[in-house]
Structure formats: C-alpha cells, structure tokens
Image (tube, rainbow, N blue to C red; front, side):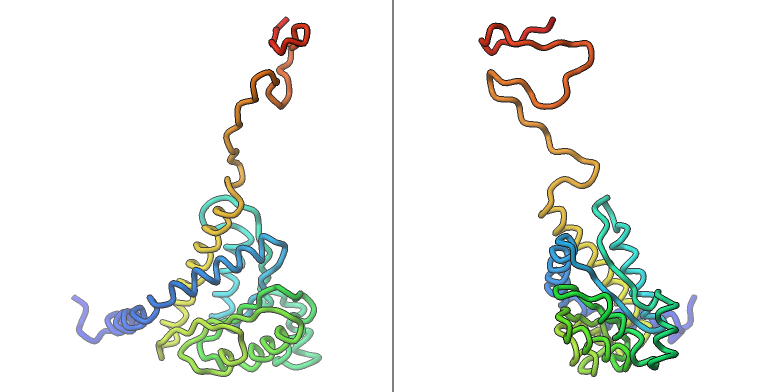
Length: 234
C-alpha cells in the first residue's frame, strides 16, 4: 500500500481540488470552441505560444487542429510560434527574448485570427509582449494561465485561469482544456458543415419525368421515347 501523504496522494489531492472550480469552465470552453470553429473554417488561423512545458502543451493543440482529434475533417490552420526555431533564435539574438513571439505575431497575424498564449504563472514577459502586439494588429487574444489575476490575463481579451498553486496541476488541466477545445470545435464544425470528409449525403430521387443526374453507366444507352418522358434502355 502507498503510505499516507505520499507524492502520488498529494498530487492527486491537488488535482482533485482544482477540478471542482474547473467544472465551471464548461460554457467558456464551448464558446471558445464554437468561435474558433467558425474563424478557422472561414480561413482564419490560430497562433499559439508558450515557454517550456507550456510550449509543449501549445504544440499538442496545433497538432490536433492540423490533424484531427476524432473524426476526419478539413485541416485547420494552427501555428505554434515556438516551433519556428530559426526565426525564434534569430529574433532572440537580434531583438531580445522578450520579442520572440511579438515579432512573429506581427508577421503572421491577420485581423480576425486568434492568439492563444499558455503560461502557468501568467507573468512571462515574452507572452505579455505577444498579447500586446496581437491586439495592435487586430487579433483576438486568449490566455490559459494559473490562478488569476496575473499580467498575461490582464493583457488578453479572455482568459481561462486554473485555480491551483501547483504548476503541474495547472499544466495538466491546460492539456484537458486543449482536448475539450478541440471537442467543442469539431462538434461545431460537424453541425455547420454537414457530413464529414468521406461521407456523402443521400441522393434525392429525381422528379418524375427527369433522368437522375450523374454519369451514365458504360454500355447502356438511354433515350427518351418520343418526348413522353419514359425511359427506354436499348
């Protein structure tokens, strides 16, 4: 048996405590997912960034969007700014690390796009700078952070703040957030666009007196019998 007060017990206790307030985020997650679905399906893009473990979390999200979470669908434009290593290191070398994301936002962002920034502390200067740059060029800014208030939450249009002082728990619920965001997005896409890729809506029967649309089978000649509308196979 695991001794009382073990690392596992402590970790799970902290996670369970954070889950209680996290349940209240459902309406926000649904709203973000639906909003993002319409923006990306309409040709917009999602830019994401984070540092360290939060960078890995952000890149996990872009992989789900460019690929898929569940069912096949159109690929959606999502770019992890920290994955652009040559640009990131060049900007850091020439302008300083505070500008590594802000400069990329100004290069890639277009009005109507979304910038999503992940930070357990909410105090990373390069993310706050990116949020400020995004707002200056017309992007919508969202943040995933730890407990609020914090500078990043204040710099963004909307924030989902995980109420936990434990960095690991915050990151774990950020991953849950990414999965749920994709779930709500794909649900909205399915409702808005109809059958998924590879599925076809059932064909409606042709009105009386008209031939069905589509190619004629090879080897079969179809004619109309004197204009009466009756189909004759020769």
